[in-house]
Image (cartoon, rainbow, N blue to C red):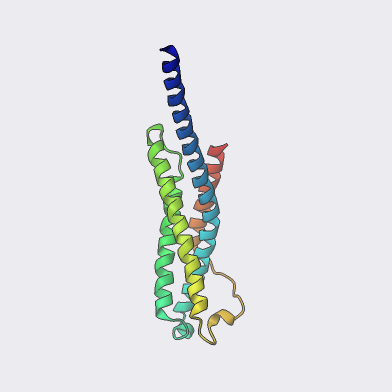
Length: 168
């Protein structure tokens, strides 16, 4: 009888340990996904804003398809929202808010992954439908960063540093 109880206890303990290990692995994967996604999305947002600034210039109005401008503008808004969500949810939660914060981090990591895929799809689409004489053949111009973009980038950097310090 004692052997059966010990066997059941051991099975329950193994189940709990494997569940804890899976949760830890998932949390590590989420953190790694965020750390890979943040620099990519902040750089892409700067590029999108530069493109939109150039597209709004009167000299370029007829050179850039309106559908591309609309798509990039909408995507830039979504990337900006995602980065701001990250900043908001990277602050250290109170002890009772930790489970919710973890769920939000997983949601943000998945959102970053989806946005990265959409950005890469957009790049492929642009190369598929590139026009002869497209502005992409021009030499690279310096990126003009708006004060809002600088504030977002600084907030993202600060949030990443806080997360790294919490992880240690």
